[in-house]
Amino acid sequence: MSTAALHEILMRSTHYVDTIVVDDGVHLVLPPRRPNGCGNHSCDPNLWWDGPYDLVARRDIDPGEELTSDYAASTTKESWTMRCQCGAPGCRSLITGSDYTTTDLVARYEGHVVPAVRRANASKECQP
Image (cartoon, rainbow, N blue to C red):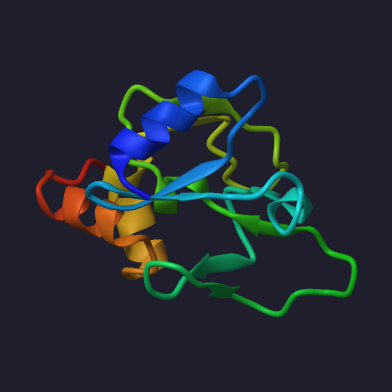
């Protein structure tokens, strides 16, 4: 959906709206609870992006294990922040909209990010 349509939904909504930026001016609005109700953020996720719309396994996932992705791979709003308590080794504790510019994350995800993040990363100098 377009950015203008997303803004309209956000302005009218009385509940949390889960969105993912896919590309410049293109957003996914996820339905309440399913399938996204079974996923969460992790600093060491078991899913990553394979193209603009597909999350795929980054490693083997045990039955019953929570599905996780790193929100840095689908977030470009630099003012956005979220406290993290994922418990992963190397947990960043604070997730920000500019995490995608860190050298570590660029190397770790090897391009497995949404196109908007890939483009934003190409236009920024990576930080250590």
